[in-house]
Image 1 (cartoon, rainbow, N blue to C red):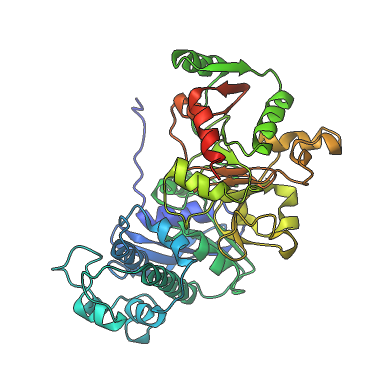
Image 2 (cartoon, rainbow, N blue to C red):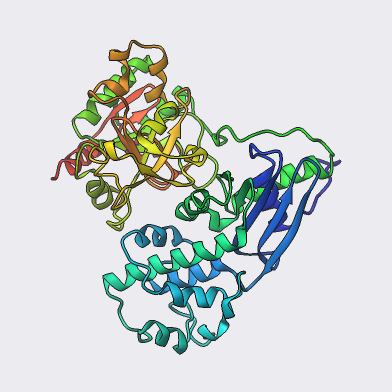
Length: 461
């Protein structure tokens, strides 16, 4: 296909570092990359400016904080390499009772850098994290015993806090910090770095995992092969496929679903707000699919956060997942600071935010147990539910339709919206049929028996 193409080999953590620094808003920064393993390394610390991206410290496998986090995830019954995100949210419900033991494992001999003490591991026990008898003895547990709910929560809180501490040590201090690597998909860890006071600004590449190395490879070739200096900041991640009205219409007709064709944004938003106001559940499908592991507004499910049972209903009847997992809040970017203490990373669901005290009662259904929420600050021009705010009179603005100055929206894993709606859901597959989950498609309002059943489920309480 490309007979004159040239293959450029880029080291795994070099790609992570390039993906973190070159799209960042900084002219110079320290860069921290951490994951389980890639090209024999599990992490590196870099210095970057307009002319260089140089490693100043490297961490080699198997001394990986991310790998230890995965081991504990497996001990808790989750899939290693796939469900670590569940551990971070479980950690919010527990106490770090085992913090000191975990920190001793992560930094053998009291070191300031990650170096795992492998006496706590046993290769002859590959299941449940592969921990040795010394590990169980230090925790006061027995190998193979069934963990109580309190023990599981405390183990999750302990690994979260211990990994945060060792990463803070490694990151050091400075003016700007850029982050990438699979461990930086941990929103609580990113927030710990951002709120530590050690850096003026912290920016995480939103597709921080291995998918994001494609961005890094492109930037590396641009800078070091073509010797170009232009930089492009990350404005949005809507890089996937999209479908026009005719394609969507064909799918609806093939599925024999009844639907109404809505010609304007105003009618679409009025229909959506009416359903949300009645505590119905709405699936929203618009534009291009998001790149990376998080849905950021174009693929999601909306439900009212004013309903105290919204999270419970979504977890039980739709997601069918653990009750400790909450949903993200999406808010128009210009209003985010009014309701949340959040930073730049809120645009991509990459950190957690503290709800301002005056609004904690409103967000009770969405709070992560105390005062926290995952926040997605959304540009109004991107998300139709917010777009009309700039063109309509104040009382006609869609997200003021319920008497609130926003349209709360909570998303699951990768989502958007703080206004009169809760948006949830993992990044949905590329197929047009995904939009048939229930309700909101671009310019369509879909009615089906499936939708009716979802609505009944939402009202079960």
